[in-house]
Image (tube, rainbow, N blue to C red; front, side, top):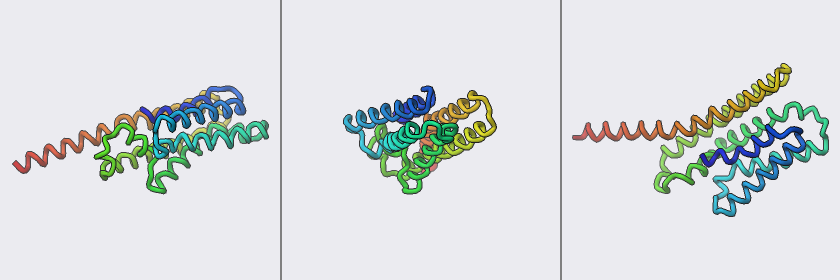
Length: 190
């Protein structure tokens, strides 16, 4: 669940009133987490989300304080998910899924270069990217339709919870599938 730490600034931004202070707080939290983890020896390949977070909230804080009445304020939740989607899709495009470095923190080195390990991380990152994309779209629709704030919040919570649950469960499902295949092959050769 190390990847969830990377979402703390996004959650802070969502719950702190006022987009200026929310963006500034998220930037400070994101920067603190990035520096803390880097100093603890976590490689930059495991800090892609944190780095992207700092860049996003730095830009958003500048915008929020320089143009506090910008119409983008109304869509800041959707912009956040769109940025996360771009980050996730971008890591897939360069064949370095953002979950890969995070997964290496808890996976023995002998599995890092296996096709299964890479495939699991491609699938997990794709689920995150799709969830971020769909959430951004859902939040834009709810904001454009002037739906209650609760609707946007529910969309955003679902946008984090669904891929988080998938991330926790999917590797276990794949491992069980490979174990069953190995057992079937072993029995077939006997």
